[in-house]
Length: 423
Ligand code: SAJ
Image 1: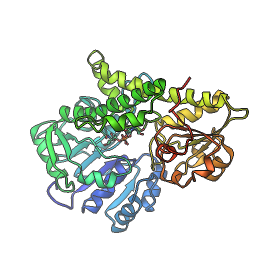
Image 2: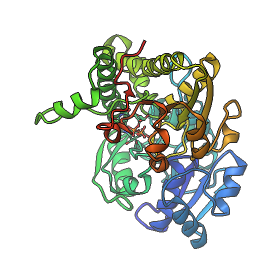
Image 3: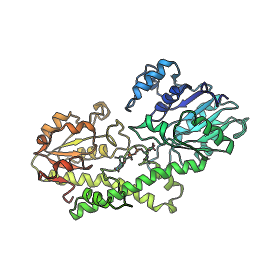
Image 4: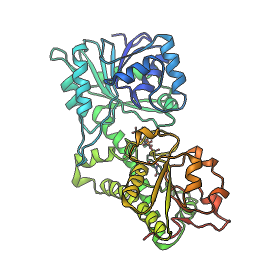
C-alpha cells in the first residue's frame, strides 16, 4: 500500500459529524478520498459541495475538496489503501451498545480489503470492538492482521463547533491490533495531524476514549448535583462555583439543563456495560445528569403555576450552543415534556433547528417568543439569543439553566430561577 505517500487513497465510511470533516481534511492534506454514506441524499449533497451538517467553515473546506477533485462521495466503498470507519455507535434502550453500524461498515468494506491495507476504526467504541467486530467482519480469511493487513483504533476526539481545528491540532491516540499495526497507523496520522500521535494498543485506545468522556460526564454531574443542592438551599450555585474555583486546585464545570449530544451522554454506558460492578461512580454520574431535565421541568411547572395564562417560551433545542445537533438533547426533552404536561402554552425557538425537524412543537422566531412568552426558559446559550434586549423580557419569569442572563440581571432586581427553590 501507498502508506507513506500523500497520494494514498482513503475510503472514509460514514459522512456524518466526524466522517465528513475528516474526509475534507484528508483531501486538503493531499490524499485521494472516497467518502461513503448509505444515505443517497448525503452523497448527492456532498458531491455538489453542500454540507448537510452545521460546523464552522466546513462548507469552505468541502467546496475546496470537491473542486480539487480529491474528494468524491459514493454510496458504496471502493478499493483504497486505507479504510476509515466513522459511523455512529449508539446504545439500546437498556444502555447496551448497538454496534450494528460498525458491523455493517466492516462487512461492506470486506470485499475491497487487500494485502497492504490499513483499516482504522475512528468511531468511539466499547472495549474490544476493534478486535471482535472490525477484525472479525472486515478482514478476508486469507489475510492475517499485523502481517498482510493492519488494523487500528484511533478514536476521534474533536469538539463539535471546533472540529476542523481540533481534528488537526489535538494529540491523537492510535492503538493497533499488533505493534506493526500501530506503527503503520501512527505513520498515516502523522501525515495530517499537527498534534502528537501517541501509539498504544487497540484496547488501551478504546478504553482511553471512553475514560475521557466519562471524566467529563462525572465532572458535569458534580456541577449539576451542586445546582440542585444549591437550589434547595436557596443559594446561587454559580456564585458558589465561581468562589470555589478561586481555590488553586478546584475547577468545577458548569451546571446546565442536563448532558446531551451523541458522545458524553452515551459513551460512559459502554464502560458501565463492560463492568457494571466496578463502575458505580460512572453510572451514578449518568443518573445525576439524566435527572437534571426533570428538575428543570419542575422549576418551569412551578413558575407556570403562579400565572393565569402561562406562555412558556423555550430558547434552544440543540444539546449545546451554536450547533444544530439535537441528538440526546436535554433541551428538546424538556420542551417536549412541558408541551405534553399541559402546564401552559409552549413555544420553542431555535435558530439552528429547522421546524420540519420538530413537527410536534410550535416553533417561533426570536421576536415572537419574546413578545408572547411570560416565562422564558433558556436551555441552549446560542449566540443569537444575545440579541434579546434586556428590557424586552423584563415582564417574564426567567428560568436560566446556563447562567446566560445571570450577570446581566444581577443588580436590576429581576429574579432568575434557579435562584429560587424548585418544587
Ligand atoms: N456541558 C455542561 N456543562 C459543562 C460542559 C458541558 O452541562 O461544563 C454539557 C453540554 O451542554 C452538552 C454536554 O455537556 O450538553 C456535552 O458537551 P461538551 O461540549 O462537553 O462535549 P461534546 O459532547 O460536544 O464533545 C465531547 C468532547 N469530549 C471531551 O471534552 C472529553 C469531545 O472532545 C469528543 O470528541 C466528543 O465528546 C466525542 O465525539 O466523543
